[in-house]
Image (tube, rainbow, N blue to C red):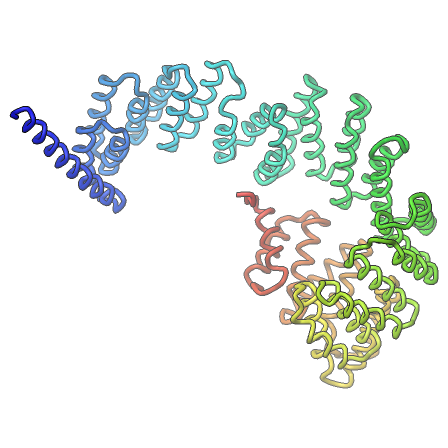
Length: 602
């Protein structure tokens, strides 16, 4: 009976103590969070002494440091080290006291001793590193992981932890070394490595660090394809496209297995507008012959690359004719089907806009429309292209019929809004301004943001320049210039734009003319003249409907053509700040962050 009574009293007392601990714990956490460290320390001391729980210790110890009771903290930690020499977190705590008091050398000595004395197992190294994490001693956490690798004889241990530390510290050399250490066995990390390095690297010297490390690796391990991939990416980032291709071809000749890598890199070159180098890459693949699995894809992309050069006016008429013949050969060889429609579309564009053969372009598109199993959107695009041919051929009513047919037939698709906008634009070319404006006003509510923005600009262009007879007549000339540019007659379009001020002085189209000329100059790769036009528009026409377009276009010019990142960044920042409602705001924000070096992946 007495024994039972003792048990009951013991349990009752234990529950009271436990309940009190719960109250003290909640109150201690509250004091700690409210920065009332003196009160927190009193309660946490009691809780830690009773339980020896390291969770209480961390808070108690931190509270003592916050109220600068360094002596008390040191005595506590030294006592615990004697009692528990195997618990390295107490040694780290002692080092932290010295560090807080400006005794960095003594602190580091203790830290390194703790690292050297760590038990040789993975869990203990992680625990010690976590102790360093908690006091933000990231170098020591990294040293712990590196020592763990050495002690355990595994150079791939703690890879992700080290990458995280080096990334946080922006230690470029260490980050490069760690990625090169792990990529051969973890090739899936390549996209992450490229993203992290791209956002961390600031200038060419950083890429040269990577290049030197990669070339050193490739000398010892020439068959490790992941190193070649990263080296090629590095060349592309520096816009050294020819070197990227040279490296790839050398790799292919050495190993005879770089075909897919070569093809993918050629696609990257194409995406980066390095058309001439992309063409060389595709031609190298095509030269391997039709038995190569990449023969047809490379031939298709070769036409795409040559087509882009043609569109930018960078190849002569003979080369355009040869490209048209290549496109026609694809169709002859593989027939008219949904796989070869792309070739017919490109052929018709060349015939219409560069070879001055409108009947052939019309016939080509009509052939494409006969292909079976075409997606609805593809049919709509082909018909819109056909409508554009009618415009070039001075058959506006035929063009309007086709545009309206597309708008009705594909009413629920974005292509319908595109067709309606082209109809409105054609009315503008014809000088039917009021009707064009009424169409544009309807399209301002389009679900396609791009079409809605174009419609808004067209509506404002018309309404802003119909205030007087002089302006209306000037607008007629401007519409003529737009039509000339649409027909790819840049020289005549520029001449028409320049003559507007002469024929109708003091008209209201000055900003519109500057923007139109800038677009033509960019298309003709005359970037200096484009810069001059855009700077004039921005400086003198702050209330223009084109102001946000002009700022973004000039920023893009500086970023991608004139290599002036600082000016590009300033302009993107201005667009973000001054024009929050612009359709271009989101893209400007993204580019600004990229130039600034933010990591968009986190």
